Image (cartoon, rainbow, N blue to C red; front, side):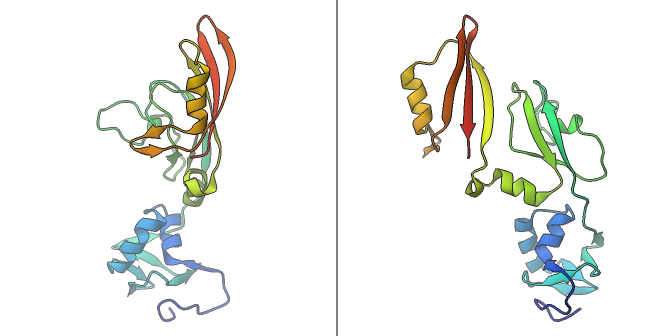
Length: 194
């Protein structure tokens, strides 16, 4: 291997943290302190510089574990009511992990749907995709159809459209449309990007 942080050939190379994240070991952000701790070895040599780049043929280890780039798998799951959007739940409730097939890589849900919410949920092993969908910087829109009891008045709709304060922080404005109002309540369409 070339000196830490250098590129030794014309082959396609990537940051060491990106390789660790692609393996599914941890996120790219968590890989940086892992590298600095000295627990990562490239081709048998301890590496502590997060700017190190590795090529396809370089062996990367964390402790005794050799990290291979995991396949990128993305599934769409129609999450039913009664499942929490997490991989494990300390309260013992059913999780979306119970619904996912074994595809040979760890799949993680992108975003959250509440226990009593059903709908489309993206589950992926692709950390880059998950980041682009969830990070507020990319402002990816999420659309929700809600059925609420009663009919919201114009004041309530205006508050949602202007942003509401949650835990001391004002949310970005939401697009809110009333789709129908009936005896059983109202159906609303929310479009959020945070």
